[in-house]
Image (cartoon, rainbow, N blue to C red):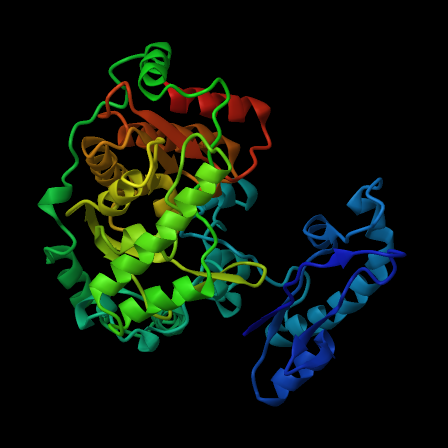
Length: 477
């Protein structure tokens, strides 16, 4: 078991006591050593996982009114005494668990760490590059490749997934069973192949292989260049030099949430639901016109989430009821599960976009989520390369971009809010990722007319100005 101290602190006032070394359990402050003792009394050995001092400071934020003229790392000397004290408790627990001397353990991610074995051959002596020969069989610890914080808890909690789909998945509880099975197999136990039936079912299922999602040859360049398109768009839309618009979603009130929940639970009819959503859209449109916004949005009152909404309507994707996973700090999300070929069975946004356009003479933006963001916010099938799945999603979104255009929507926003989240740490892998990420974005809008204006939104900050400029240039081409 791993015990993790995860928090973001406000640094304020006199800047004393900036390292908070306790977390709240059952409404009481208990320090790490007490937590370890309490868990060990239950007969469970635990490895504390603590935030290091540099990460702690760099992930903190300055409280309102605090002098911001100093670098956060200048506080390092103030928190080190507490850090050392807390890490001693952690180290003691870890030593009790492994009872090893010197370097206690090596952690190797052989799932995503494609270059790990090459590294081992370079670093360790000849003949000792196998993990077992590095640490000894008695010291080999089998683990998951990442923290189970990033995995839903238990498939038992999923009441709407059918038996076949459940047999293909492993949430945190199932992964622990798999780790135990792998450890026993490495110890020489012959357990057969417990996943063989599920793997055979998945491989042959028509739910996985969908002819409608077969990769079509698609160019990623629009028919006309940027300057020609700008001229045509201006002639059609007649926008001012610096037109105004909003990102898209408007706040969802409690009344609006009750309407969506009531419709989902079949407590209100479809007619009542459509009427309530139309009223909300009308309010949003009138508000934007009052503020003289040039390009309007419908506000997305019918959408629960920018990714989940599309996941519900694309084939090859499953949604969970209780599959919450840790994202950042205390924030959790329900990620999609992409289990098969992704395709676009029918229009997803046209009904609401055209309804909103009928309420105003100003341009109404169609609002879509891009393929890279959908991919990066999902658990992705592992039986084909990620870029192939991304191409399938791009082609599905391409169909959806063309649907509202045919219905008279001439401004469309394709959000890639999670584009940078998929960027790997190893810089040598950046060009490959960015090439296919931008390629997929451009596929989504390659089929629209030159008079149709395409927006995009990326929320993450790019640390490299060169990278940011290159990304913007690629997406415009």
